[in-house]
Length: 174
Image (cartoon, rainbow, N blue to C red; front, side, top):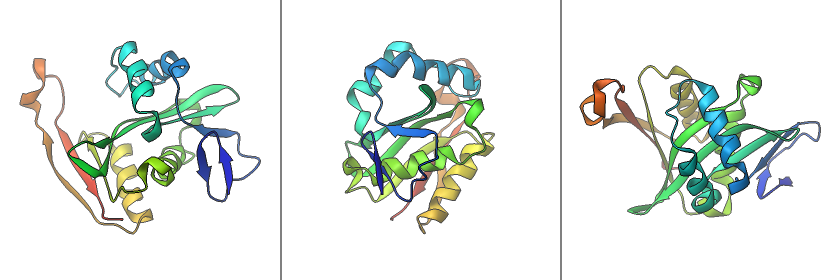
């Protein structure tokens, strides 16, 4: 195992250009840009990403390729369910898509010290987001865990009537 900026990657290939690490506030604007460039994720204020990486860095991850942020996942341990990691956003830059990076990021977070008591992973996904659906079903398979998809947040809960429903994925126990 090789350690990369706070994340241990099992079977890491030394020729792998990606560096997996905890995000810092210095990454905030680059993370915001990756989210914005995805053209599919909800873009929150740049301030929200600064707060996120300042307060939830141990359950989130940033991936760099030659100094450029090409991946980010935001996650947190649920206060009411300390055995559950909630994944909020998964973003991979177009230049790094199709290489299994999102899956590798999820595994790295789950292997981190902050997740030592985590037995479940939850995330909300819109029905039209096929890549995220495949990602979380694949994670369940990789972890040899069951998954359930239930109602998360219905369309009527969002203002303006322009946001698709969010289904809740629950994976575990693992």
